[in-house]
Figure 1 (cartoon, helix red, strand yellow):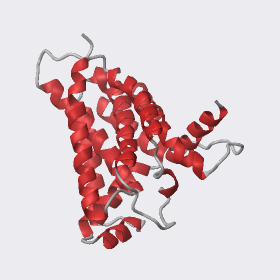
Figure 2 (figure 1 turned 180 degrees about the horizontal axis):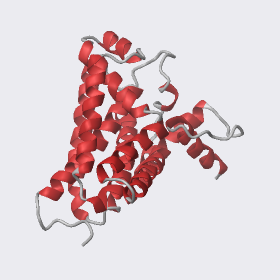
Figure 3 (figure 1 turned 60 degrees about the horizontal axis):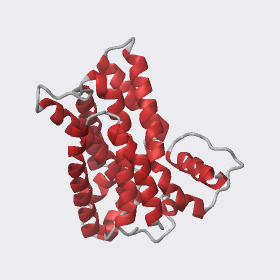
Length: 260
């Protein structure tokens, strides 16, 4: 039990700005195994984002409340996944060989592709959330953060890690994912599918899987696998796609209700 608690704290320590106790045992083995608890990080980040939205909405307009909730999630994670998305935009936008793509992806500076990509990502995410019915925004945030992180874990199981040098900060946690870890992550994710309390929401799952498979195919074609930045891209893309699908699902029928 203590070992599992250490793994949970390791996951939170790596993927959020939350400081973990110094007495927690740190090892590469723990970093590998903590992948199974990434969805728990999603519950926490999404939950805090939802709490900020609900609290702010009592005093502020909905649009501003949504912006504050997005800012809270970014501050909590240190823009970890958003940074990966920007790096992928720069790398695949400016590189035409595997070596060039990996070199650009390693560069901490953000270029034109990355800047444009992250601006469009955040604007689209804000617009989609703002177009959701007010009574499901909070739960949608939690659902999207959890499922999107599971998709990243699934990619760790589906593709090979391509960096073999020590330059990637993500190397220790993105390798050696076992089937057991994937199943644990899935078990933790399943409850989030029912937070919106309507089975109609499940129709978006095939869309999310197709999106993940297309991204994986693209990454495999150009670099032979994935990097930590690719995982961040899958997380951000999946999160955004969930919001867009929920908006589309709601607008398709005037009789659609999440709480019947």
